[in-house]
Each structure stands twice: as structure tokens, then as C-alpha cells.
Image 1 (cartoon, rainbow, N blue to C red):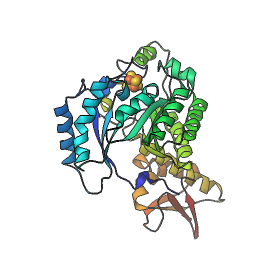
Image 2 (image 1 turned 60 degrees about the vertical axis):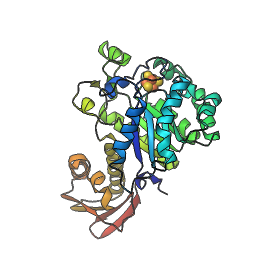
Image 3 (image 1 turned 90 degrees about the horizontal axis):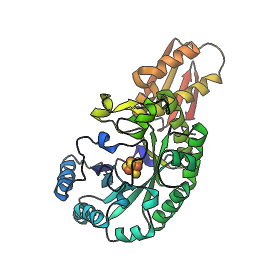
Length: 356
Ligand code: SF4
């Protein structure tokens, strides 16, 4: 069974509210360098202008369309301000132009009280910033909440009928691969509708930047980040939980190195993760065979050609080197189901579900 993230094409209209409602700065965070073009919570007019400008590019295949308040702690904001923000987006939903509103918030702010404020507004999705389910890691990251509060927040949001997303991070101070996998499994137990997985990076102006400079924190390498996120992705997939994002959204500032000091950032991080999963599966298939391979043909659904080839054909080069193959050919074939690879060696064919 394939969760629907590949087929659905939602349009999320982001409205950045940098650090609005944050009780303090978590060690890894600096929203102001992520959203440098905008340092303040936008006015109602600015929000509505943003929504209209995104709607100009709306194509019929984008569904659902949601306005998203990101970059802060939505339910930590002053109540009157929450209502102002929701009121800015609500008319577009009432007029049927967009489908709903979503926001991200800390677990400790998602209380029954706050749910009552939301009740009259067309909020459809709540994203909970869990980051880790290990209390020692949360404490070291100065999150100011516990894993149990994430459990309670997810329960409360779901009981109120919201679609629930959970954000987690890997490579946090005090965490390791086992801890991240354990976080992933505990998040699965919360049965969210979707997750986002972010590798921790060192952002200028964050407390982590000082730790990094003092040698107190070493981020994951890009390859270790990809490998760990890959394991988590497969856990979520096997549990039919959509993974809607892996890696930070690329921005000009992140890409030109002016705000990113270190860490596993890549503008196509998610692509690299999926490409490695495809590569792993071919390795498994080839390891089961004996003898020399002269020509290996890999058939995949046409939309999977790029992940099968890997970034800059890395998968092809890797497979040729590892198995001494003279020629590896990747072919798009619409008859191959999405997420399957058909391996052809000489006259033999085998087919495998990549995500199984
Ligand atoms: S991680 Fe969330 S709560 Fe912490 S500082 Fe950043 S936006 Fe605020």
C-alpha cells in the first residue's frame, strides 16, 4: 500500500510569524535567519496580499489549498493576536477559495483551553513540534516541554478532530541514532496523519552556533543525516504515515552559506534520502545473484527515474563500482507500479517493492 504523499499535491501558502509566541529560543532555532526577508509578524493586509499572490499561481491539480502559519509557536501567541491572524485567512476559506488553515505549535501550548479559541475558525491541520521524544534531549535543547506533553497534545488535537502532523529532528544535542529511531517509533504510536523530519543544522545566531564554535556540538554529516532519516522514513512508510518533508526548505540564505555554519543541509535532502533507498534495494537484489554482471537494466515508473539514477547519477556509478557492472541502464516504464523496481540481468527479471 502506498501512502498518498506522491499523488496528492497540496498547496501550502506560508505565512511566517518568526518567533511569535515563543517562550524562549530553543538551542537549534533562529527563525529570523530562515525568514530574513521578514522579521515581524505580518499585518492583516500583508497576510491577505501573500494569500492572493500565491493564488495567482494556483493550478487545478493543487488540492487542498491551505494557509499555514509557520516559524513560531502559534498557540503561544496572545489570544487577541491569534484571533487577528485567523481572521485574516478565514474569509478566503468562507468564500471557498482555500480549503483551510494550518499552523505549527509547541506541544505545551496545545491545551483544551486553546482548542476552544480555535473552535469557530476553519483550522484543519495542527503541526506539533515534538523534535524528540527523549526528555534528556528536550532538556538539553532547552525546549521547555516533555515527551509526555507531546503525547497529550497529539491526543487533544486528534480528539478535537484536527488533522495532526508531528515534526521531529535528528542530530540534536545529546541524541544519537538509537534515540532518533526511538523517537520515530514513539511518534508512530501517536498515529499522526503525517510527519516532517528535519536534521539539526547550525544556524548563525542560535545558541547551538556558540556550542559549535566552542566544540561542544558536532552536527551529523550529510551522509549520516541521510542514512538516519532514511531509516525513519521507512518506519513511517511501513506504518502508513505520510512523510511530507525531509530536510529544511532551501532558501537563498541557506544555500549561499551566510546563515548556515554547519550541518547536513542539502537543497534536495529528501531526494537524496529516497535515492539512497532505491540504491539499497538494488544492492539487495544484486547481492542475491551470483556471477559477473555485464548489463543491468533497472525499470522504474517514469517519475522515479531521477531517484533511481541518484543525484548526478551517483547510484549508477556506485552500483557499477560495487558490482563491477559494465553498463547500468535506467529505463522509465509506465507499466511498473510506483515505488517498484524491475531488475533485469541477462534474461532474468525480478521485481521488488522499494518501500517494503
Ligand atoms: S523551535 Fe519553535 S518554539 Fe523553539 S524557538 Fe523555534 S519557533 Fe520558537
